[in-house]
Image (cartoon, rainbow, N blue to C red):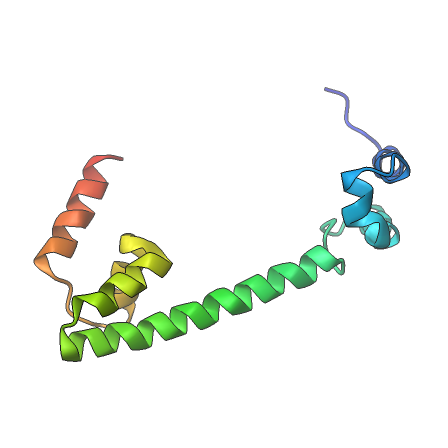
Amino acid sequence: MKTKTKEEEIAAIKSLIEMDGYFAECFRGDFEKMAENIRKDFPIEMGTHLDTHSELIKKHNKEIEDLCGGLLCLYEKLGDIRIYECVVSQLGRKGAITLKRALRLKITDSEIDFLIEAAKQK
């Protein structure tokens, strides 16, 4: 496959925007920044709405993880399985176990069994 020049890449993006389809709807406002990023060999999304959106998602995920950490501490004190299930619904079982480990909370036998089974399937 032939490697495109920077200007060919920019022309391809411009062409997609000129088609006035879904791509244009999402990226029209970011075209100049994307073109600049290509010319400077920067990540194409840097400084665009995608970059901002990505940062918001990271912040949101960190907030969820922090909340789940608090819930796991509460679960360890109260033993209410509904609290643990809430964390699992947000992070998945592996994520909940990973967070418990990071918080130095007790890992149960069933969690160890889960990790062993997951390791066997790799």
